Length: 115
Image (cartoon, rainbow, N blue to C red; front, side, top):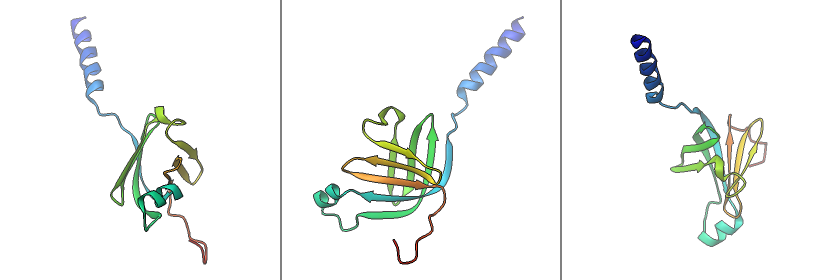
């Protein structure tokens, strides 16, 4: 009986000590500053793009290593401070009046003559 109790307690403690794993992947991001932000900050480059790291844990999203930018989108703030749009090719996050961040699972192909 004591041996079973100790084993159960040891397994429970080990489960608590294990780190929580997030879904993580390499992705491709585009960041488009909205007109209000470009004008307010006198920005010369209203859009950037490049590789990024995407991770998600319990609905909370983190985008790291994107041209020195890091973003956090807590699930509790969705619909309040940002809007999230899930699509087959990726996810977009919009903070109205500030920026839209697009996360693509693969780098999008450019249209001939397009951006």
